[in-house]
Image (cartoon, rainbow, N blue to C red; front, side, top):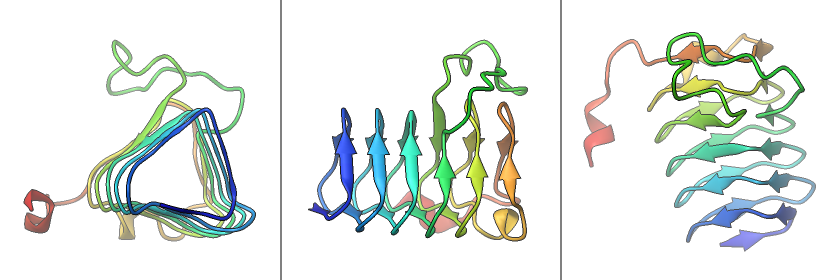
Length: 130
């Protein structure tokens, strides 16, 4: 791992990059993920090879609305980002949010995902199985 930013009470896997000015707090970051400068990842599980854009805020806010699709298991304030997803610069992702594996284009143009939302890929990319 290459840590130039701040990591607090988190699990960081091999190959992770946390750029200068980025903050990772109370989170689990999977292999080869990149958290770009100025991004904040809080109370979030990132699967492997996830990219968090410059200035993105992930797992933030005080709204603890349970996930609309799975309130039975996504109600503790932890957000989940699936394998090889790309979060664009400046996006805000609330608590109890699920972003499925390989999600990229679906997030571009969005300013925020409110607490409890789910975004899944339109089609499951075959490269996610390797």
